Length: 278
Ligand code: GLU
Image: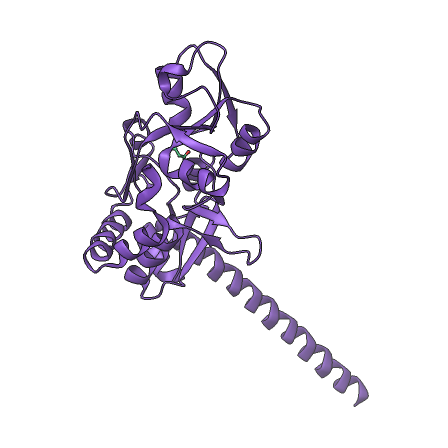
C-alpha cells in the first residue's frame, strides 16, 4: 500500500514537471513569434502596438534638447514638438520616450532600431537623404558664428589661416566651414556642450553651427555673441528609417495639424525669441 502511494506520488510529480516544462516551451515559442512578427511590422504598426514613440533627441543643446539636471527631464523646442506629435498620433503627449543622440550617433542609432525617429536639430540634406527619409521642414535655421564679444572676428571673412574654429562631429556645420574657410583649423568635438566649454576656455577663436543653437549659448553666457549673419540654409526635418512611408506620412500629417491648430506657434513662441537676431 505504502509502495502504491509512493508510486502515485512520483507519477504525479513527474507529470507536473512535464506540464511545467511544456508550459515554458510554449512561452518561449510565443516570445520568439512575437519578436519575429514585430520585425515584419512596419515602424508605425510597431509604435501603435507599443503605444509609445521613441525619439532620438539632443541632451546638450539649449533651446532644442537639453537635459535639466534638476529634474532629469529633457527640455526644448524639439522635445515639445515631439510631444505634440505623439499627442496627434497616439492621443497623449506622454506616450513618448526620449533617447539621447548626438550629431554623430543619430543616424547609426536610427539604423540600429534603437529609436523610431530623430528630432534633433537635423538639417535635411541630399547626402543624408541617401540614408534616411525626412519629413517636411519643421524649423528653418542657418549656420553662423559665435565669438567672445571683444573678438576681432566679425564674420566669415575674418576666418583666416591659423584661426581655430570649433565644431561638432557629424554636423553639416563642420563640413560647410571647411568649404567656406578652407584655410582655417577646424577642431571637432563630440557634442555642443564640449564645443562651447572649449570656446569658453580659449581652446578656439570661434564656434560654428546653426544660429538657433548659438543663440542658446549666447543666452547662457552673455559674454558671447553671434557675428556675420547666416551663410547657409539649414532646414530641419524629422528623420525616419528609409522606406518607413506609413510613419513618415503620419508624422507629416501630425505636423500639418499642429501647424494649423496653433500648437506649433505656441511651442515656437515658448522657445524661439524673435529678438535673437539683434
Ligand atoms: N543642423 C546641423 C546638422 O544637422 C547642425 C546642428 C547639429 O549638429 O545637429 O548637422
